[in-house]
Amino acid sequence: MHVLVINCGSSSVKYKVFDGDKSLLSEKIERLGDNFSHADAIQQVIKAVAHFPIDAVGHRVVHGGEKYSKAILIDADVKAEIERCYSYAPLHNPYNLEGISAAQTAYPDLPHVAVFDTAFHATLEPAAYSYAIDAELASQHALRRYGFHGTSHQYVAELAAIHLQQPLDQLRLVSLHLGNGASACAIQNGVSIDTSMGLTPLEGLVMGTRSGDIDAGLVIKLQQDLGLNASEIDIMLNKKSGLKGLSGISNDLREIETAAENGDQRAQLAISVFAHRARKYIGAYAVAMGGIDALIFTGGIGENAVNMRRRIMQNLDFLGLNSDQDKNASCSLSDENPVIAVNRTHSRVSALVIKTNEARMIARQTRQIASSQKPDAQGCRPIPIAVSARHLHLNEESFKTLFGADAEPTKYKDISQPGQYACEEKVNLIGPKNSIEGVRLLGPFRRNNQIEISRTDEFRLGVDAPVRDSGRTKGSAPITLEGPAGRLELEEGLICARRHIHMHPDDAEYYGVENGDNIEIAINSEGRDLIFGDVLIRVSQKYKLEMHIDTDEANAAELTRGLGGDIVYDDIAMDHACATIQRNSKDAN
Ligand code: ADP
Image (cartoon, rainbow, N blue to C red; front, side, top):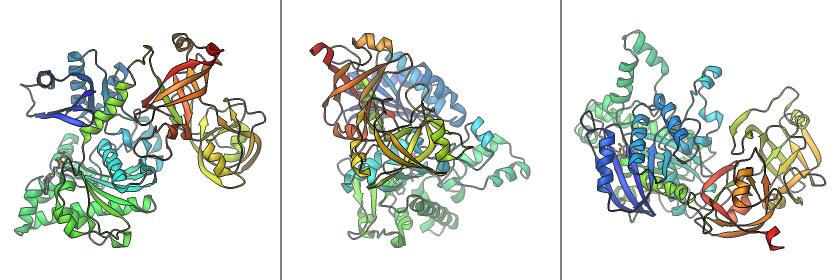
């Protein structure tokens, strides 16, 4: 599949064509402005790629707001949401959208996919994404940490796991993307748990021209004492600060390093502040994750600036990171050699320099989504798959026992089936053999308690749970639940959920199936294709088309992102995997 990747910046358009992971063309159109618009540039792109059989277009979009936790096929709603986020990324989202519209006009029949810089950080918990300001105001205006550079952090994390030959979901990584824009990310078990950029890409590390962290009081002072207005402060902090502001020379680290060697004190300070800030984040994130397995350097500075890496890694032996300065000095990345370890052989923590490739990641995600749009051999639409991590449904009485008489469930986020949502609240499952901590509650309340786990969980807990259709908990297995306010010994409710497909009556008609049918499904993942029998069809006006399987089943079909291991999503549709109906047992009889 040939994918065109378009990255529309404020004054440039970068584009690449991929066949699989292989880049066939990489170009940049610069100096866009009044006389040459983004739409003009896209016309030029279309001409330049005319000889490639383009199958899909992937667009980098900087801000996806609170709504998008993954790449998505672009429709009118997606475009409206990108526009709604203009105020959070005024230098990016308007141009991203202009590029999308122009490309859609040129390729009206191709799937267009938006890949968001913010999406990888959608896994941040409230403790990490909340600013300690008036909570009501924050919620009204969606003032929270979003994080950026997500595509890059995710890409290098996956390469790190492959290099270390360990499953990504068992690693604690600190990724430093150090370029003109710079950010740090704490990646635990394959997901972003904290990142240094915030509501906008201004927060965090020292950047080329951006200040990164400052005391918010400084902004008040600039306004009150110096009389600067909002746009003047914006220009000062976004364009005239960072390495450029500190050094007074340039935003280019190479020039600053030369000046520093020649004794320029401001250049020396710029380098020290840059390194000091990065080191602070390594420490903070190591604590947040309870340790660190690898430190990753990427981006123009991370990949190339030997001396900056040396400064940042200095005296980190107490963390278990013993850097090797010879390896660091001779480190030279290439497409053939995109990961180089610069730690000593005995170092418990690895230090990896990794060549990032956001466009390749965008192409991959675009390919996955575009291929899930293609009809199967019978010409039917494939069915998206969602993987349910272990979770539970409670009735109100049980909730009160576990969380307190005055407690109310707090929505964490909507899940794919309309009206259902994941809650902030989690409980521990106590089995005769072991416990499983932090199992998430789904809302709204149900009449009966239902706790859904996988076969592997059963063995861990030491219980024997029957495979059941959702809602059929009578005579299922007992389990003890533990919440912050109390314990609940349930005589039944624990099940291993039978795999099933939710669908609307229109879908049922389209596929020629009925509620209660027992069908066979083929899963085409990018890993191992698999056929599942005994799949229940559940039809309701309320349902959205989606197959639900548990983590064991997903692992069997290698429906994981990155490398192996448990899937950590709470019921998130996996767009890169889809199922097609093979056989209905009703027809076979
Ligand atoms: P962007 O965020 O705009 O994509 P890059 O990731 O290309 O930026 O990073 C640009 C930065 O990388 C510049 O500050 C540049 O000075 C720095 N850089 C590139 N090569 C080197 C090098 N060999 N030594 C030091 N800094 C370097």
